[in-house]
Length: 210
Image 1 (tube, rainbow, N blue to C red):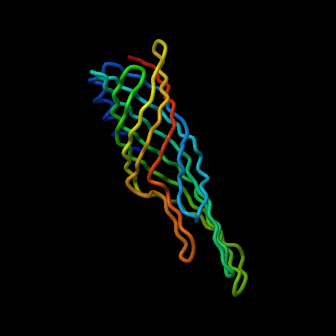
Image 2: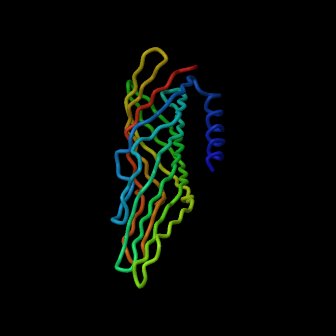
Image 3: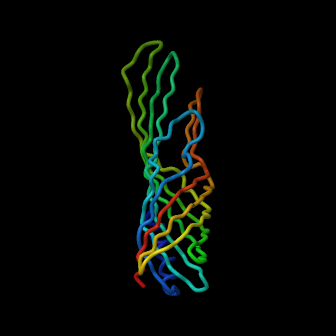
């Protein structure tokens, strides 16, 4: 799936570069400012950082296109029990987002809007201990997960400044995802799910090569 979006991103960039007036490449990174889980059934252990490559193409009349490939390390831990058993489980996952943004630049600042597909792949480890009617040894299991593909609508804005060919752009970006990518439920206990609203504080650093 990641390869598919890599090809799609390359196709979009090729078309934009042909008509673009400037081309800049670099990195974008920052931190998630919003929570990633809701519900009382799990504790989020996701890393707040986000980082990845960025390509910025300047077009005419103040418009531009930016395409990023953003990596996040996601995860949660959960536990539940009764007089008869205890369950402990957790997930670690790699999340990739591919924002494709139309930008409008005004002096020293910019606005952006676009679309972002997201893929999440990870593994879940579980420990089950039976206590009643007879005590049994701890049972451990691990399974891989491929959560459903998500589609996000992205809006944001920030400021931009630089010297020579170097450009630095602090920004605030909001993404609304179309689905609940990660969810869990105990049959007789609490539930949890990922949030659909995401806020990131980002810093882009790019070098103009054309």
